[in-house]
Length: 176
Image (tube, rainbow, N blue to C red; front, side, top):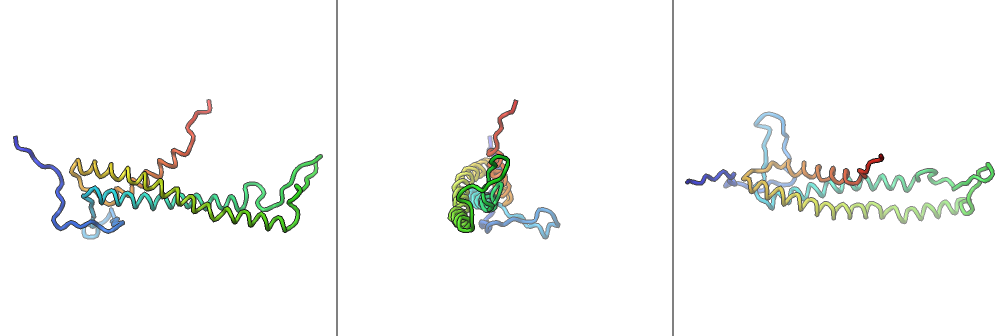
């Protein structure tokens, strides 16, 4: 029985496309110049790079939102703290005057610069892990099937990775 090789062979003049090498999907044939990935290393590298970029963008957006919440405060912002006593509002001791306000601003500034740094570091670690696992699995599947991979596939999987991360952050417990 003759064995037929159905695997896609790598073209002789193949060079790994430069990152990101996304091409316009819609248009006339002379405009659309698709680029493909053939080797596991290339597939892994593109998936890893896209995952790092998408994770960093998402985490830094959340970090800047967190900075806004810290800076402006959830309820009163930079206003002095008050409490209700016998139907009257009173300022809490220690929050009077501009001296304490300046001290609170300085305390907030000490923390604020750390928020994007920590978020970026966490995003990098998560992205390397997720991008490596997904990239290697994609490379193995595409090579086992003998398929060539469009350069759009790693980008799409990086979006899937961040959506899975966002969805996994929610509690799915029922309220019944």
